[in-house]
Structures are given as C-alpha cells and as structure tokens.
Length: 341
Image (cartoon, rainbow, N blue to C red; front, side):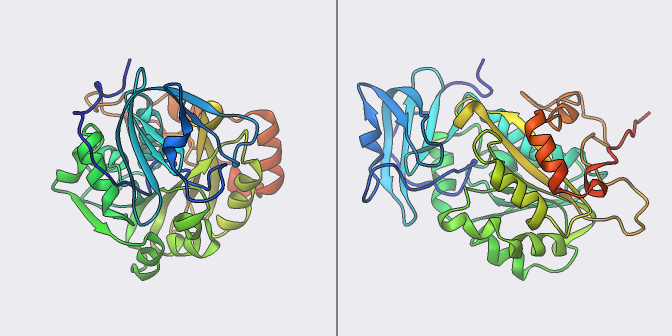
C-alpha cells in the first residue's frame, strides 16, 4: 500500500532541487541533460554513471512537469504504480509510494535517539518530508529548515501535497539559502538534532560532504546532540561511506551507519550516517542504536517502528568488517539499553 494516498492533482509546474537523497549528477548522455530522452516506449529508465551496469525503470502514465531551474533539469511524472515521481538531472529523487521509508528513518533515528530535541535544523529536504516528520515530535520547539532553492518547496506543494504539510506548522521556520553557509554562520551549541537531507557529493551539495561542514555541524550542536546525514548506498558507495565515517565524522564521539529500504533508489537501499556529540559530563553512552524515548502510539508512521530502529544498524558482514577497521571501537560501541517505564 502507498504510504500516502494516490497521485496529486495533475497540472503543469516547474521547479524542485536539493531534496531526497537527491542524487542529482551528470547523466550518461553528453551535453545538457534532457530527462525526456530517458523515457522510451512509456518507461523512464534511470541510467547514471554513479551506479554503472544497472538501471531502474518505472512505467510512465504522464509527464506532469518538465523544466530547468538554475540548478538542473527537473521532471515530475505520474507513474502507473508508484505515484508521482520527482526526477532531478535524470535521477529519481522521490516517489509517493516509498518516500515514507526514507523520510521517517532519516528523521526518527536521530530524533528518538535524543532525550528531548527542542531545537532542530534541517539542511535541504525541500520536498518537506523530513520537516513533516520532525514536527510530529511534541518536544520540538522550533524546526528550522534551510533549503537552497525555493523552487523545490513550490514543486512539493504542487505535486506532493502529502509531503508538504509541515511547511504550515507553527513550529516550522523555512529559510531559503545555502546550507553550508547557514551552518558556518550559526552560533555554537544551538541545535539538539541536525538532519541533512542532501544530494550526492557533486554539484551544489558537494560542500555538505566536506570536513568543513561536519566540523561546523559538530560546533553548532549542543552536548549530546545528534547529526544525521543522507549516507548513500552500501552496495555502490562503500568507499564514500567509509571516508565519511572515518574522516568527516572525526569530531564526533559516536559514529554509526544505518540502513533502510527504498525500492526506487539504486539497489533498493540507502543509508544514513549518524554522529553524536559527546555529552558534557561524558557519562552517557553515545550510540544512537536504540530509541531513548517511547514512540507515541498515536504518531502517524508508515515505516519507522521502535523495533525497526535498532534493526537499521545491523549491517552486512562485508560493510561491518570494513567500518570496524576504519572507525575506532570507542566510537562504535556502547549501544544504549535504556528502557522506559
């Protein structure tokens, strides 16, 4: 069953950028990308040099919008079985059918790993899905979202109404701007949780995979704060995952990778990297592998569960061995066993 209900109202519109594992990159074709060239005989085929030798295809019911923003080629089409699809530079960013797995896990893994997240920063996430999930937590006092392109917000409101409900929430503060610059300018120890819903480490999102960004994220987190970033596919990007955990997350006391299933992404899998800033007294365990607050029974969830939370950190042997060798044991161990009454 679909996480949200069926496709949005059909109407032409342009514009998103910088959302979902927004894996926007150069397409296989040379020259300026035209996503329409990836539709043949009624099927969209996602060919990209980032995942050589494989391609995902979805059957197209109709193209709803196709335009170019200041950043990339943007297409939204209605599929026959996966709802509306957002495509940036020829790469699938989001489908209505499976967006819940990515949005909920990227958000609730760090949020439920924190005792009481009051101040939350979202970098990217222009479709609004992460914001929608963040404001479900009653303890949140303010959810600041910094999105580089307002066009993605407009597109979400037009074609993905189930994702954009958080924009109207009284605790939401939408800022249109560069996330890297925003983090650099933010004051020390401002946020309890930072969620980075960024694109791949190319183009406008490249800086969000830099040591500079991670250093600033660590600086602006409060003690015990949690950073959670889109972490790429373990089947395709193991080198990048290792580098991010070993080098970029070096300032953090706890460093982990969690996995989730997203059928419309390459290999049907993507992950997130999590870093915990040390607590002020150093007495608490820094792992994010278990929720430290109960999950409310009335929280509207389609994928995340209390049981799914620790399960996401169970990794296949080949990746676990690699990360165990790359990351000091002190940053990998000490998963919380906290229970609540």
